[in-house]
Length: 352
Image (cartoon, rainbow, N blue to C red; front, side, top):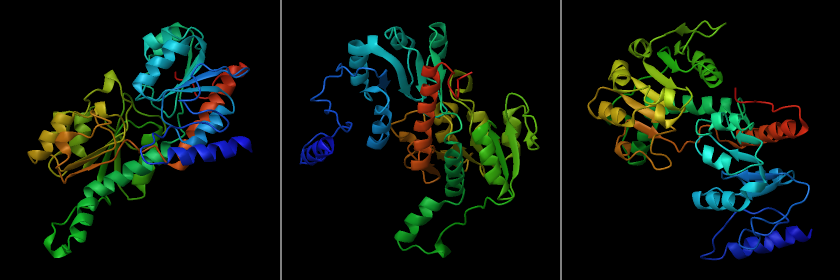
């Protein structure tokens, strides 16, 4: 009970005007009182490179000595000071883990991504060092698919701008009609596990479904396009659900956007790098594309400046995979991966 009383007292102190709030764990001193290099016997040292709720931090801290370093400065300092002790790193696809950082942690044996993406983890260097790499594949697929379809509806039906018009006293007689989604043609760029979830939701709207992958997917009846431009010409809407990285950079470019056409809409819940932002802006401003719904963009965490004044664009802050349920599932998967690795039975969801 003492640590509970301590935490309550400290929370009150930190809530005073001008106080700087930082996440800390029950029973531990906050960062300005506890050196990062404090000793936690019998627990593996975990370097945590991403923000996390206090509840999930406490859950993880039951099993590890946690070094929380979510900012660049904290990350560099933690690796320089304690890199020799780190056995496990928990990051995500956007934050990543570089080859130089892996080299600075001689005891590192497991690098985990919270969620499915791992595009900025240097997997080749990790494997060359014998470091296992795992992710949270499948833990937030349903949440991402929900958000993707929400963005599609919001963008095509113009829901955000209709909301603004209504609040300003504008009635429907003075508003141009927005197209519907029911029965339209949806092209999915990347029919992986998330793409399949999106397709199932689209089927509920009686949409015609096509997809573009490197090769056809076995056991799938949806129409396959081996050329993305052909699918863009066929589709009314595109939802981008392909992995990020160098191989898919600007896969959706000016040619694809213009093939989709002035009545077409694109939604991106994959990675910002997959869609050429400059080409997207130019296509919308010139009337060659109807609009876009983006949860990810090349400038993140900064919003895409060139799109901010466009009513045809709906933006969300890379939050498609985040809900209380999905975040908990990703943390649980990390613990399962770490438990399997440390027990010698292997991680649950290895990066192949």
